[in-house]
Length: 89
Image (tube, rainbow, N blue to C red; front, side, top):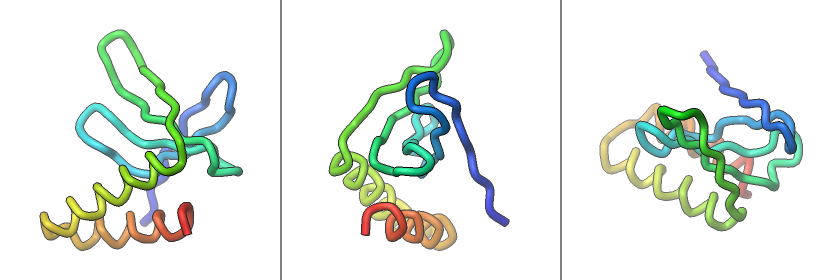
């Protein structure tokens, strides 16, 4: 079963979640072009959105891949590997 998360950004439109970075942060990209990347941080006051470059986003996804592999999370690794191949290759 595929669970996708979307966020509506006032300037860039619909954002699609690529992966969760930690308890409070997730990595999103623009839905159609997948060229703009954002870190969304959940805070008590609301959402904090920070843009970042493609290479930075790729490195964050690769870091999560390594973390999933070392923790033995095969499902998480397979899901994120597929996302990595679709977005960055």
